[in-house]
Amino acid sequence: MKIGIQGIKGSFHHIVAEQYFGENIDLVECMRFSEMPALLKENKAEVLVMAIENSIAGAILPNYALIDEYKLNISGEHYLPIHHNLMALKGQKIKEIKEVYSHPMALLQCHNFFKLYPHIKLIEDTDTAEVARRIQKEKLMSVGAIASNAAANIYDLEVLASEIQTINNNATRFFILDNSQKSKNPNTNKASVKFITTNKTGSLAEVLCILSKYDLNLSKIQSMPIIDRPWKYAFFVDFTFNSYIDYSNAMQEVKDKVLFLNVLGEYIKSMNS
Image 1 (spheres, rainbow, N blue to C red):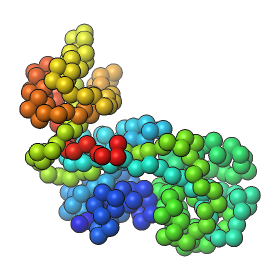
Image 2: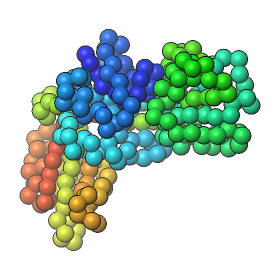
Image 3: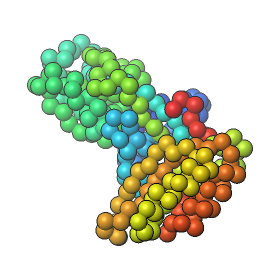
């Protein structure tokens, strides 16, 4: 199976792809999230693995926009505990490292660690594993990367400091995306939807009351500006349910109360959430 990811081998997206689909996969790599929808459209990948939110840094709003704009179907989810490590070419010590490159999210999540090393300059890059690969390929001395243990092993780097994330209980949620129709799996028990409410007072509360009425358990609500309508917002929500019939009836009632409703995906709740 061809799996599209942001990043390269050794990235957290790669780890999720193997955990979700197994090791017998073909990776289709790209450096930017914005390039991922084209992998499906051009049949270069069968599914995508895309990070959507982090327990520390919060939602990745541009990725919600990509899913919505390109009408990608959410067919699954996976939660990955994030363990950040500082690595470099072998034989060096932290005091010799002058620059550390990594993805902006990784730098943000390790901010406190680097307060102990003010001599190190932190520089944003496109991907955690790509920096590790480049350090090895170009034999970059005095340069470090923040990446996974898998990246250190793949690119033969030495881990100078392990578990450098500010908060140990750090996890990222990933969506599994494809171009298929909504899931028909009888075990489906979670959905992600987008809706736009009316301007009537209490319109959002009205929607939430419908979800409660049908025993839908709201697990996330995220607002996002509507680009061509200043100060107007769309809502992205996730919820779980025990009865598909109740879920379906709830969506019908919600549809009658809002200006717009789109089901982004119906899937099985991740067991590791």
